[in-house]
Length: 152
Image (cartoon, rainbow, N blue to C red; front, side, top):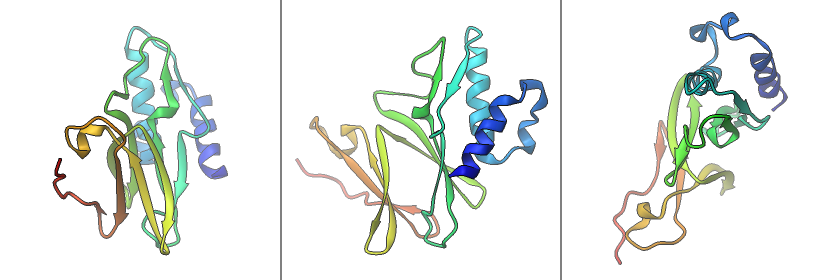
């Protein structure tokens, strides 16, 4: 976690022109793109918290993956650049590839020794009824989740 925090702090202390996005790690490229989008929208000022990038072993290989949480972003000139009623963007970077999700909240848990990514998602993903809805994702050469239709 301290490594991710150090990267984020260093990133925000650099002037925009000192950054070549292609040379940054993918997690930082995502944050840099968000910052650029905010700056480009009515000259907004971009903010993020120390929880923007976190580390979690989601593949079970003992090495943490980076998770970029756009709910930790804000822009002085826009409220909804990175989400809306369907949730906020969440990127999980595995082997240099960003997997993108929408979620209202998220959490990583251990389920019988396997890391599980839980997403609180829009109720429309559970059918037509309004109410809580969750998706559980597990890594197996890609994220897997149940796609069974729900009966009402």
